[in-house]
Length: 416
Image (cartoon, rainbow, N blue to C red; front, side, top):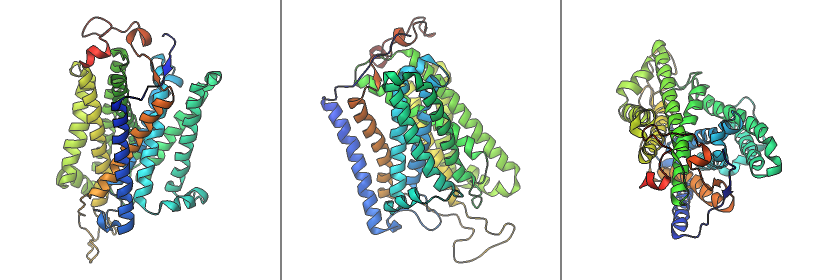
């Protein structure tokens, strides 16, 4: 591989200013929605006493999980010595920080009383997985920041592998902690499972890589830089492997629950009788987010650049559907307060809870994406995160496109 040269983008075009304006507007609408909900109370949302984590939590958890996975590209370069991914490591670290910032902003604003974060940062309850996650999130920012510094500062380059190793281990712990939030909630039949932690880890690989692919290909197309098929093909196949792994863990999760009699109720609810949750599970999570991307990523059908982008978009949509089913569907199913007993009262015991997201919730949720893209778009203008070229001759001169028998077309030809 040739020496990698990085440069900032000019950022003076109308298109760039327009992008910043769009992402800024999405962010502003989200903050406005948060103020509206804070002033009027959660009565203006679709949440209630049964469903206390709404749509903003879906976006927040998705972005936090994807942040860990976005760093996977850098980890493969530094930790596992994959030279092809080395030019992508800086952008990978940037996306990881931006995604976590977007997710935490939504999470903090959705919980209400963001000023009480000071208490969470100064008083620790080590028996609480929520308190432990505060440490994990802060540590992730610190370690990835150090990791990026090692990559930018030439005299610190020899320590990149060590910094990458610690960031790799920390992100696995972080995603384990996020998954454990649900795995430790024994009161909810949909959550009480040890497999939640590894499921969230593999989900992070798929979601993070899908977002990374979208940002990478889009940024190179808009800045007129060349990106060859060597990089895109490798990432496409890797995404297919991650999607297949997510489907496998989902299958194991449901088969395990079906084996245990006490979970038959929640399984029937999600798989058969859950109405909108069943539809989102089969159509959104399994079909749109699983089977179709799997077909596009691991067969010749997805070799064109538009099909790769389509696969990434579908994985993101399917990921949001999966998190929606886990968080909202898991709360909608009634609590089993007295196993084996019939319960009747005026407090919705044994009743499926109805939930419909409100417009302020949608604005707040999408603001996390706006924050992520705003940070990323601004950062690539002020710091050299993007290599000047990712052409085949620069990253992998021996790459051969099996469908064409040559080194593959340029980015301009592939996107024409």
